Image 1 (cartoon, rainbow, N blue to C red):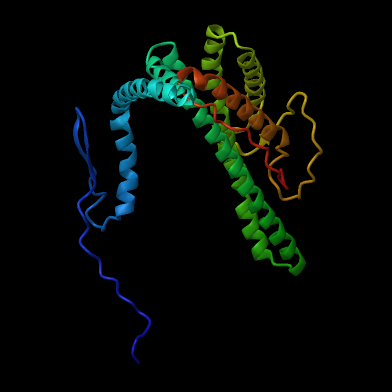
Image 2 (image 1 turned 90 degrees about the vertical axis):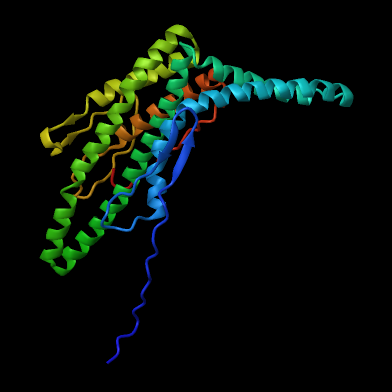
Amino acid sequence: MAIVGIQCVTKTIPAAPPEIYIPHLGIMAKAWAGLDSIPSAGEMLAQFQDAIATALAPVRRYLEIVETFSSVQQCIKAIPQAILTLNPDPIYDCLTNLAKAIARLLSWIPPLSYIRTYRTVARYCIDLIDEIFDFFVALDGEITSYINAYNSALTVGDSDLLEFIDCGMSDIVPRVTIAIRMAQFVSPINDVLLDMFLRLMPNPVLREVVKRMTSVTTYLAGISITAGGSSLVIPEFPGFSTSSVTQHAIVPVPPLGHLLYALNRSRSAIVMAHNVLSPVVGYDADAEERELPTFTNF
């Protein structure tokens, strides 16, 4: 009998790895990952991106100088245009862009350079907390699936399935522990920088941010994680009240409502700090608040 349904896709000789010329540095080239496999162009490009970003970091400074000169040139052109058209909008627009460009140049100099650094730290922390929330949303759905399977297994008396579910649930606490450890990174790095900025800029918004972050830092320090992450003790966040979640018997972690509220409060404070400090170094105040996701099992 002839074998049918098999299609052979011939591999082609891979193209040369990507390379980029960097001023004052030379040519950066990506090496193949190994000798025993044909590399994917997409993988090589993705792996090369971090190296490119590192190499281009000094170049970006020169580009900001060019941007400033370009903004000045645009203002020179806008003045006669505004006079001829009796419309001040071109001058207003060019001055707005020029102010941002000059602020970016000044952000190279301390203490503004630290504000620029914090802006990127704030962006990272916001993204990190969002990823932690997304992790808990996915984990919540996973636990719901386990609970449904558990109830079905009890109904039909399937001991093998019950054992499988027990095995799957055994890694919930370690995974939640890792997420909490990541969340505990956010507060100290923000506390150090924000305290300095508050001394330099006695802004009432920054004062409120520091107050919120301090309360979250204290709260996260009170979370008890036993050796190996085998159990968790989640304290209550002061001033936060929520209806208690009715958890299924197989859920191995306590209700996390107070923890999730504290994380969202931290995120909100970082968004406030980001939006207050970004214009100081020539960037838009474009960080946005986020509603706390809803959970079934936490």
